[in-house]
Image (cartoon, rainbow, N blue to C red; front, side, top):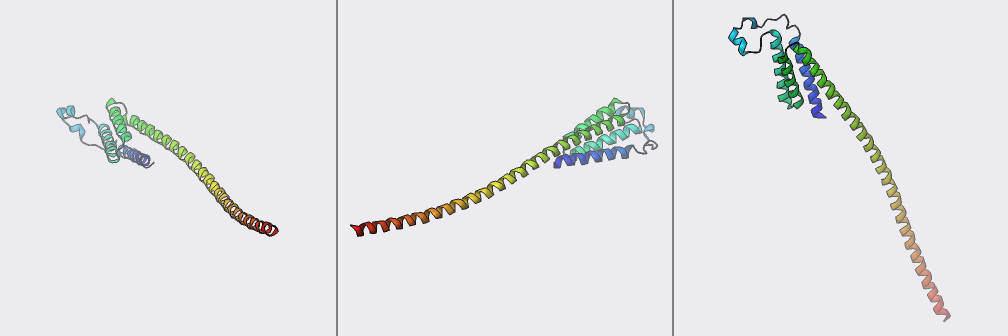
Length: 172
């Protein structure tokens, strides 16, 4: 369906964004090592990895809002939770994105199977309808022919009865 396609596009874009934000960012310095102790306590961003994770979550949330996708919003929430949990958040986030993609692909496959079944049934029904329509036309023609023949025979019977009545009157 259209919304499923939009979700798949949004997930592909999120995956691309994650790879873009993580690719080559290991060497970049964002100046977070110069943050004071008070600022570090207020902010959860303590390293470039944290910044990349925060940015990835923010972009997925933006995509969720843009496409009004509950699935993407849930993914963003899971990503934020995984990021807060520590360890390697991108491994977990990548796993979450891949799980979501697999789920959407399986749903799309189920939808495609259902659509194929419906299309097959619809074509069979249309074929049967066409056959019945042809049969109806044949029977209608046959009825019209029989009605015309019946009318002709009734006229002949009426003419013969008239002739018999004249014959009977002539003999009497």
